[in-house]
Image: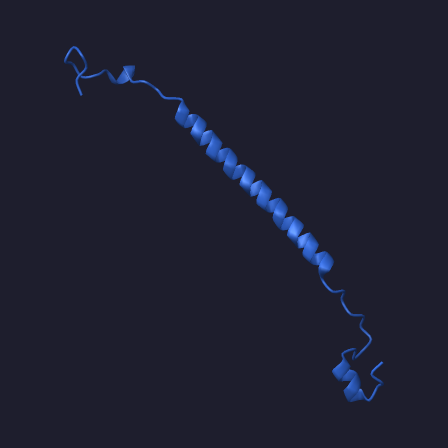
Length: 76
């Protein structure tokens, strides 16, 4: 490309744009915030799931109804 005087433009006088750096910073910030938000949501979901999980049964031998029926114990 020629400029007004008919010469090629000097590579040193090329304009440097700053807006791509702002776009890059915004994208990186968005990625960082998304990772932080998702890690908090995963921890929250695990915490809620653990609270709603049934308690582990006490180890008292055969506790299922089928095992009690097979052993001859009363259903109550």
